[in-house]
Amino acid sequence: MSKRNIDAVVFDLDGVITDTAHYHFLAWRQLAEELGIVIDEVFNERLKGVSRMDSLELILQEGNQQHNFSLAQKEEMAAKKNLHYCEFLKELTPDDVLPGILNLIADIKSEGISIGLASVSKNANTVLEALELQKVFDFCADAAKISKSKPDPEIFLTACNGLGALPQRSIGIEDAAAGIEAIKASEMFAVGVGSSLHKADYQVENTDQLCWDKIKEAHKNWISI
Image 1: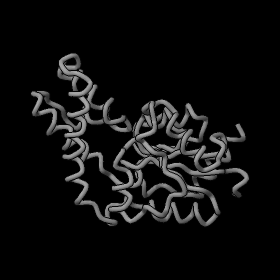
Image 2: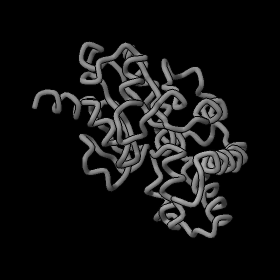
Image 3: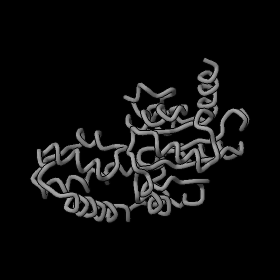
Image 4: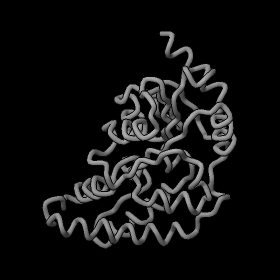
């Protein structure tokens, strides 16, 4: 399939390129414990693909403490969580790129198709540097300039715009339900990585099942509907 049919492929970061979701969980759990709030791995699923401040709101709601703090206090708590998270990030190496991703990226690039990143993480550049992937992406949407968190399509539309790509001729890859909703809202073709992403246009269980030829075939069938 030529570039005439696919303008760009836009990746989420956490859970697609690498798995830092557990680091996020550990950092959030540490903060929650300090507030007397108990969260577990099941609750953490609700935080995937959600911005830092929105994640904090969900945790505070879980402990019925959402009205106990000023905005400045909440920003201080979110910053504290980020410090915890950045400590965990120091453990990341290129070996932490998820299986199949490097081959997928190489296959996409071999066809001259642009690659972008749409991560709500404000630490995305730090993660990419640790993985030695900072030069791979043609455009990375700046989470600091995104006003609406997923499932709003803003970050995917921003990535497409930065790549000079039409969303209707582009593909998004996500591992979170909120991310799939954002891709669909942007009118892109949605590839889901995980077992419960039923709204995705094409779905695999794990990243090592991401095959460019199969994605192109699914996309071809999608545009012909």
